[in-house]
View 1 (tube, rainbow over the protein chains, first blue to last red):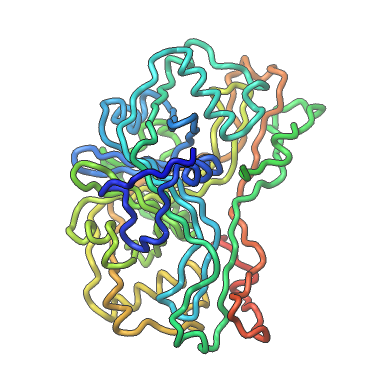
View 2 (view 1 turned 90 degrees about the vertical axis):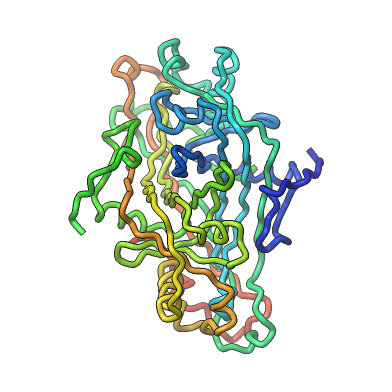
Length: 219
Length: 219
């Protein structure tokens, strides 16, 4: 996990190169805190970017969905793809407009996904996805049946060609601007859960489980 | 704004087609609540997905960045692109694993962006981007100078070919599953601001402005 990964020409961070991170451990921490990725793929020269859930197991990312979806129908052909995970952490207000920025951590993974064919691995991947999003939920849900498994496509993308990019901390202004008379600093942003909402058809005597009461992405 | 837009073969929602939304007003509300998009573009058959800020003015989206960035260097060649905006609103816990879902609103815009060459339009677009993210900030910041304007590339993408997708409300389980003994419902998720953090070099007598104290994306 402490391996430092040599960026390729495609994953080397070009702009603000000092923000580039190529260590697996740092990238995996970002991947484990997030659970929504944006998947990029190209059909007839037109790129598409689609949000979806993901999970990580070792050096692989898994995504899933209906075998009928445009995204999975195309990815199943073995075309190049990109998975990007972005954790937005704040607005950075500098004195100059030019130095305004955002605090964030993001990971970009390039490669070609393969469909998981083996039923046992498919079920394990679905459990992984579920536990990645909401630990504890899998065991308390009605498990997938054969028909549902057939309707679901699971794709595995090896995390081989990747880079992360991180910006944190206060604004960095040009030295001449520090005297400019305005407020400067950071507005932190965080994705937070609200109080769990019972399904209208839920037995009113059933309590909200702990994993739905204190949801957090901190890892 | 009440126009209903006919989807193309590329923007028609394939999976969960009832979630597809093709009205400009509905798509624009999503675009106005968000401020981070994921931009897709293809270089040598490899798709890339990069997070960045955006703003909307009328029927155009604007993005900006360093003219040296990989993304803008490529987009400036006039290649097809995709801008996707996703507002995540909750985890949907059904009785069956298969019917677990997320509540979200998303917009996908396809097209080709053009660089804004006119200096006046460029400055207006930068103001638009700034006010889209944090209304009130532009007037209190040091304005861009000629050198900074030259270093910044602003791209305009007409909102012509687009679709939105929306999922809201409680889980939908198979009728047979409603008796399954587990909790079901929604964990709402929201991006919320924390208390503004002063820049360490800020004059300690300068108060946090109202726009940084009560930041909200509700539109």
